[in-house]
Image (cartoon, rainbow, N blue to C red):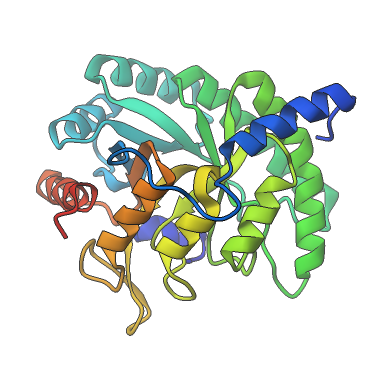
Length: 304
C-alpha cells in the first residue's frame, strides 16, 4: 500500500445474551463454509465505480456524475464531506445522473488513527468516522471505508489491534443504528498482513456492520488476491481495483501488472460476490476514464 498522499495521487460490545446471539447468527451467515467456498450458481454481479479524485479537479459535481455515467460507471466513491453545499450538490448530481454514491472513504484515518496512544487523536478519528457515516446516510451510500490502525515505531502491532478494536466496537453500534457497513481496508500500514488475520479481525465484532473492503492491488507485494478473496469470502462488502507489478514493485495501469485477473474473477464467482468494484487510480480526462472503464469491463467479463 501507499501512504495517504501517494495513495490519493496514484491512483460494541453486545448488550445481553439474546442480542449477542442474534449478531453472531448474522455474522455466521456471511461466512464461507469451513471446508471452503462452494462455487456460486453463476457469474458474480459486479458493478463499476470510480473514486472522486479521479475526475479533473476543475469539474463540478454535476459534470463529474454525468461523465461517470457516460463513461459506463454506475457508482462513485467520495471522501468525507465537511461542506454542506458540496454534499447537497453531490446528492442532486447523483439523483440527476442515476449514478449512485455507494461509499464514503473516511478521510482522517491516516492522520488521526484509531490505534493512536493519544486519546485526543483517537477522539478526532472517531469524529471523522461519525461524520463519514452521516455523509453516507445523507447520500444514500451503504458503506464507509476505514483504515482501522497504523503500526509504526510508536504503535506496536498488539496495541494497534487492541486500541482500534475498542474504538470500532462503539462505531459499529452507531453504524448499525444508521444502517451503514464499516468496510475495513487492507493497506500498506503494517497491519492485518495475512488473510487469516484480516478474517479474524472482522469476525471478532460479530456483526454484519463491520466487514472487509478488499483492495485487489494492495496485497500483491506480499500475497495473492485470489487467495485473500477465497479466505475472506462473504466478509467482503466492497472492492477496490488497481494493478501492481510485483517485479518492479510499483503500481501500474490496469491489466499491465502481475495480477492473474482470470483467477481473481474465478475467486469472486466462487464466493458469490455481488457489488461494486471501485477504481482507485490516477486521475485523468474523459478519454482516460473511458479507457479505465473498458479495462474494468474486461476484468469483470473475463476478457483478460
